[in-house]
Length: 255
Ligand SMILES: NC(=O)c1ccc[n+]([C@@H]2O[C@H](COP(=O)([O-])OP(=O)(O)OC[C@H]3O[C@@H](n4cnc5c(N)ncnc54)[C@H](OP(=O)(O)O)[C@@H]3O)[C@@H](O)[C@H]2O)c1
Image (tube, rainbow, N blue to C red; front, top):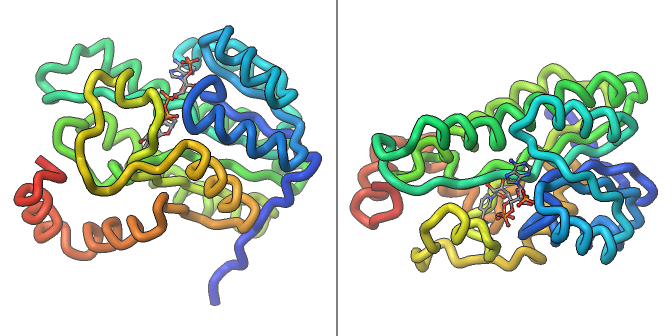
C-alpha cells in the first residue's frame, strides 16, 4: 500500500518563493496571492521584484542565491515558512568544453546547492511544527539533453534529492513536490543565450505552469510534469535508456 499524499491547503500559509522576480516564479506569486498566502519572494532584480511584490502583496527580499551570507539571510527572514518553493534557476547552452568553469559553478550553485541549502535550513522548523511542504523546480531536461549537460545534471540531481528527502520525511506530515516542466514561455531562454526552437513539447504559458505547480502542492503530488504527458517520456527513458537515446538522436531532441 502506498503512502497517502500530503496535500497542503494554502490559504493563510507562509510561503517562501525563490525566483519570484520573473517568469514562472512571478506567475506563481500571483496564483499564491489569490490563494491568500503570506508571501516572501526573492530575486536579484530589485525593480522587478518590487513590481511583483506590489501586485501580490508579497514581501520582497533581494538576494543573490550564490552568496552563502545572503542565502542565510533569506533563511532567517523566512524561518517561519510553511511552504518553500525552490524555483530560481538558470540555464546554459552549448558544448561542455565551451562552458567556463565560473559558469559551471554558478549554475550548480543556483540550481542545486542553493535549494539544497535552503531546504536544509528551513526543515527543522517545519519538522518541529509537524507541517511543511518543499517544492523543487526540476525539468524534463533531467532525462538528459545534448548541449545542456550541466543544466540537465542539476535538474536530475534535484529530482533525486527530492526522492531521497521523501524517505527522510515520510510520516512526519511533511511533503516534497518535484515539478518537471517541458518548455515554458519566460525570459529563461533569452537569458541562457539560445531561443527555444523545438516544436515539441509545445511551450506552456508561465501562468499555466504556475497554476499547475500550485495545484500539485495542494494535492500533495510527488512529481508533476508540465504538461502531464511528459511523464511518459521520463518513464520511457527510465525503462529503455538505450532506445530513448537512439530516438533522441534521430529526432534531434537529444544530441
Ligand atoms: N522556462 C522553461 O521552459 C523551464 C523549463 C523547465 C524548468 N524551468 C525552471 O523553472 C525555474 C524558473 O525559470 P523561468 O523559466 O521562470 O526563468 P526566468 O524567467 O529566467 O526566472 C529565473 C528566476 O531565477 C532567479 N535567479 C537566477 N539567478 C539567481 C541568483 N543568482 N540569485 C537569486 N535568484 C536568481 C531570477 O531572479 P533575478 O533575475 O531577479 O536574479 C528569476 O526570478 C528555473 O529553475 C528553470 O530551470 C524552466
